[in-house]
Image (cartoon, rainbow, N blue to C red):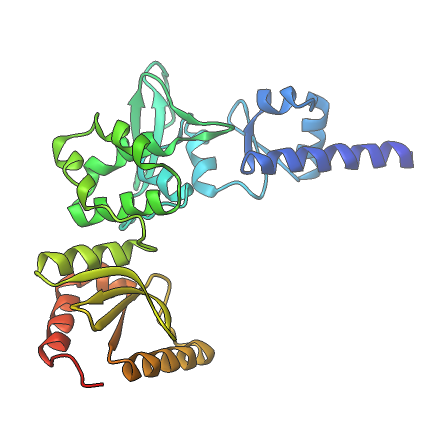
Length: 293
């Protein structure tokens, strides 16, 4: 009995490891090709370590909720949803994008905040068959973005994260609208966040000199340096209000001031929802002139 139980646990553990390899969500044929029997799948479901999604998928706790929902709708993650899953910056929450074959019939209805794209063939992301590849996701998402800032921020992010290289991006962009192709010369893969990309572009359009990801001796690397002396940084997660973070910020600011710089940080909400206000702050700081060292 103990031997049987131990063998069952080992099978479940192996199944869990293989599911995790696929991002917590895999088709049952994928799992069977790795040697997992229908019995092993049933045991995992009975034990609660995995559950069935739709007719052919199996998921565990590592699966992304949006991906599970997409396959339950008989599709896969596409567009901006796939980009987020790949770790690529998307400025605004746009809802769940589900990609389904054009030939599929009697599909489940989407809810509010969800939309479906129908395609002839789904360009899946290798073994992670629950989402499209990055190039396809960009083609689906970019025409929906409201501003060129948002589009460039996403493209910068895809390049910076090495989810796509420049050569592949140029091939993908060839099939996009001209207004998207015209953005390629303005990309900067050094940008470490979409906020930084947005601020860089807006500052350049104001006519200011902007350098990205500048290393300053005794300080380290900073997001942007405007007109040679104003350091601008963007915080994508939160303001540094933790005592330890705040102390580091004060030390960093002091080091910059001693070297003839001034420093200012903007938060996510400021850049995304009040970009004009951010530019007014930068203009006011620049109006005071470069500080004496």
